[in-house]
Image 1 (cartoon, rainbow over the protein chains, first blue to last red):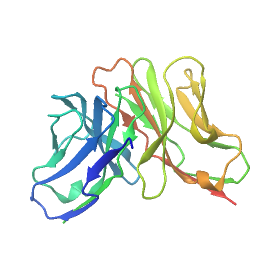
Image 2: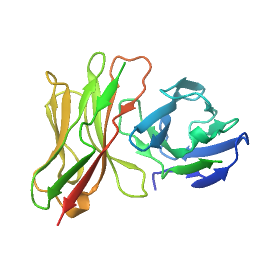
Image 3: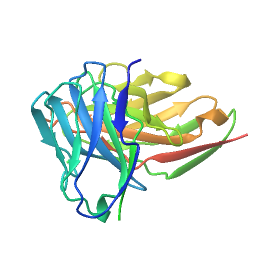
Length: 112
Length: 115
């Protein structure tokens, strides 16, 4: 089944404790992206990747890191999480940047 | 800078009536335009997109959208609403000429279809 998977689905952590949210797609897509969803703000793009080893900042990259060492994986790293990073996070992938995106199920992160 | 506006936080419509969810955008050059739907506790699902060609785009589940370049709008429509259409709808835009390749989503419109 074609899908985008994210882990974990739910995470509660404390300020400053490094964490990684994994994202994997099995569709051989080149474009991958991370978004955060906050009430009233819609989805805001954090980082995106056009292909392996090619990443770039979206609209809200501060406090986040990404890497794209393999085509299928695009982990999101929070080196020192803060409470304002409490949000619902989505990973997405598509064939190319102008194509429909397939979204993962989301990761609900709470930073205390 | 790119931006998307969805002027209505909430749209209520009776089952069987036509529905419209509005979207206006601002982008440099020609746009890629998308509509996505989010059901409760789910990820987003693609509905339809406009790249070029006919201004009326048909998508999944009987939805369609009309691209209006002069009004920079891309309103989502359906001739006859179903209760199961109740969800959160997002409009998104990307510039075709933007080297940055980033997407901008609107804040979302919650559609409630009343039986």
